[in-house]
Every structure is written in C-alpha cells, then in structure tokens.
Length: 288
Image 1 (spheres, rainbow, N blue to C red):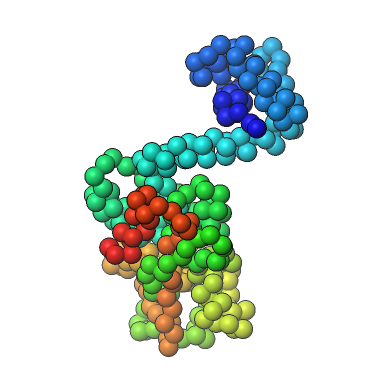
Image 2: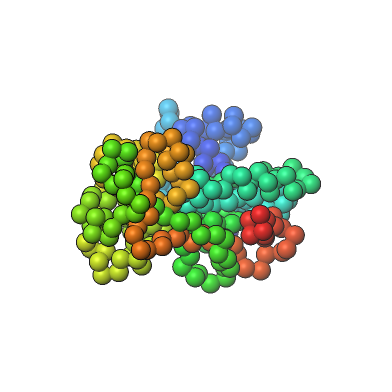
C-alpha cells in the first residue's frame, strides 16, 4: 500500500529539483525526504529518482509514476473536502461553463448557511465524463451522457442552436437559412465528441457528409472570432452569441424548417447522501 506522505515527498522533489528545496517546502529534514523516496521506491519496486550533486532527475519509471502520484494526492484532498462538506467540484462542458452556469453558482451559494468553496472545471464532454468516473468532480453539467452505470443523468434544459455569420454576409436579409445554402458554405466547428457534432449527425443524418466542415477550433470563442473574420459560418448555442448579436458584430438565424436544440444534462453519482453538496446543487439547478 502506498503512503501518501511518501508520494507527497516524491512530488516535492520532482517539482523542486533537489532534496534541499523539497525539505524546505515540506518543513522537514533532507534525510526524512530521502527516507520517504527510498520507502516509496521499495513499495513500487522501482527506482524513481536519480540524485547527483546539483539536481535530481526522474528515471523512466519516475516519469511514468508522476501523473499517478499527482492524481493520488488530488483524490485524497478531494476526499477530505467532500467529507468535511466544504468544497463542491463541478465539471462543465465549454459552452455551459462559459455562458450558462455562473448565475446558478451564485444563487446556490446564497442558499447555503455555511462557507462553501465551489471549484469549476471546464473541458470537453468526454473529459467531464472521465473526471466524473474518476471521482475528480462531484457533478457534471454536459451536452450528452453515455449512460455509464452508477450515475444518474437528468435533463436540465434545452438550448436552441442558431447559424451565425458576419454582418456583411448576404444571408443578413433572410429570416432563416435554407439547408442547401448551408451545404454550399464553409462550416466551422461541429467536430466529433462535441454536443453540436452529435446534433448535426442527428439532424442531417446521411446528408451530414454534404456539410463543408473546413475548420475545427475546439471552443466557441475561437469559432466566433473565425466567423467574424469571414472564414465561414457556424452552428452555436443561441445563448453563446446573444451579446454579439445585440452589438451587431454577428448575425444569427435558424435553419429553415428544422428546430435544433441542445439538451443539457445534470450528471452525478448515484446513491449520494441527500444532505451532501452534490445532490443539493443538482436539485437547485433543476428548480432554479
């Protein structure tokens, strides 16, 4: 069984580059740090650190172990925080964490009668799902869910999608965009693994290949700047471009004859105590 104190010393030596500075960070003696590393190496049956007069360097095994070491400490700290009920960790896919979540975080904190820290991690939908599975976050707010066991997923809301284009585009005089018009225009975004990409496949079916996807940027902010630069058009959540449309820096129209909406889900581990922060936050979102 690995000792987390030894793991913490290993990370300190790795980040400080020598035993002297690591001992200062950990407020202990250099021989103590050295003993921790030796015991950790014995437990793993591997040499992790090579020490010379000036600096320490990691062996190949040390480099392989390092991300696991950091994950072990991160999970240990989270376990302590969860048991103390002082920290709520929320994961959100990019659009949700950027454009939708903040007012609900504020209103949830206002309902609490104690000081609670809320950590928000923003990433892709697959990354949020993996962090949920690895106990690195308590609640995931996502654009899809893959029905992993031991989790509950509740639809929170639906967000309409619109086609965005620059103000000088000829579509500006229209009330909607025809399907054939979209097929004939360079499309930015909609990459696999994104919520928008899933909706595109559902809406267009076998015609998805007709779309001229010419640029994939990975974030809606980058997409908006690319559209403003005239590199193409894109499909985004209406709420993500509300400010730009109001300011006149982007135009937005629906797809003619097709109602495109993105489902947003609240996902958490099943069987959590009702008094813990995660179910409380999920319930707040559902009823806010």
